[in-house]
Image (cartoon, rainbow over all chains, first blue to last red; front, side, top):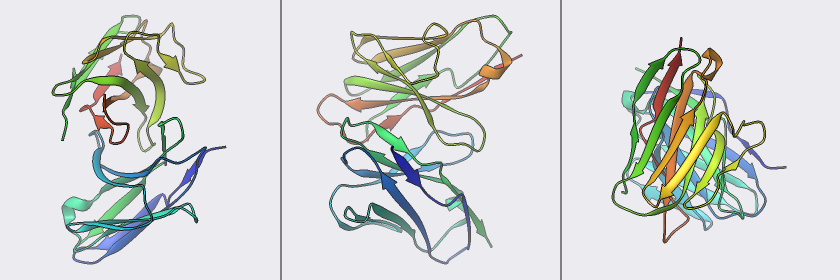
Length: 109
Length: 116
């Protein structure tokens, strides 16, 4: 079956770094997405990885290892506004997104 | 990035009535649109995949006669919740993909439906 695993909740301190891990098992693979979702709002796109390695985009970076079925989202210089849920999604062979349950990130001052 | 507009943002309706939610791709053509439902503190649950000019594909457990989906053009898909009940109260979100690519999915703003 298809499955996406990510931690339910994480807590970090303002100004620090946090890494949110995601493991996936899907029928075929056409890329790994990370989305940010604030409470009561729709998800917003953060990153897309289809090749192995690290993609850096400002304070956010995303890593992919296809052989391990593993990705992580790295957030640096955390700000209070980064408090949100972070959704990992894998695109399967039918180009359908398989969503993880999301990781709620709590930032403390 | 591309823009997807979803309307209304929130709606309150009486039990037994029907509610229509619109999802429009404003600056691109979307062959495929997806309708999700999200309950509090849970992830997105795919309800159905809507393809322009053809019948929607519903996920297991989603009643197609209750959640009517129409994708009449490359820029508009609608979801109608028929005979709504309080248990249908949820956050409904649409997303769309561009004609030329199957990568990034662009999301509408979401619709908060409350059935009283």
